[in-house]
Amino acid sequence: MKLQLQHGLPIVSLTVAQYDKWIVLQNVLFDTGCAATVFDSDALAAIGIDIDFINGRAKRMYGVGGTSEICYEQQIHDFTIEHIALNDFPIQLGSIQEPYGFEGIVGIDFMMRAKCKVDFETMTIEFEKQTK
Image (tube, rainbow, N blue to C red; front, side, top):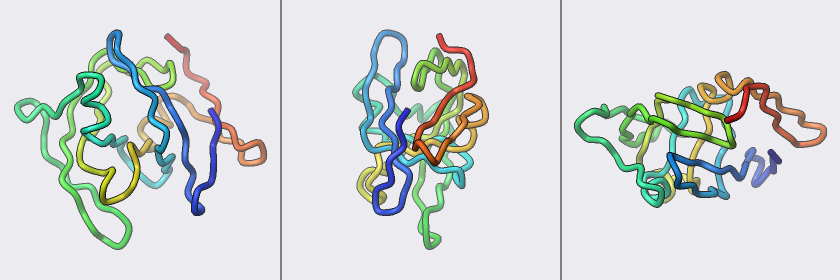
């Protein structure tokens, strides 16, 4: 996966899928300082992933400068990011496109699970984890 700096921020384009539906998100922040992986709820609604108000739980996501947004954390079954199988992976869904300008934020939870290796010389990210 290629890493690009936009306004000094590490941005990636990635494919997200559940079951037989998939979407390519072009503007995703690759954020080692973010504990959880967060997606804009409108972006994932395109592949049938909606906020689960019954089984999910509300969490507050804090951004730069202490601003915060409400997100809903929920387990996603049969979920993949860039061919990395993430069964029962917790993600957060919320409105992040408008306030932050991203379709998603890949957090350290995904990076550790996928065993990401970032090469800043070549601006690439490799995954050590087995693919689907």
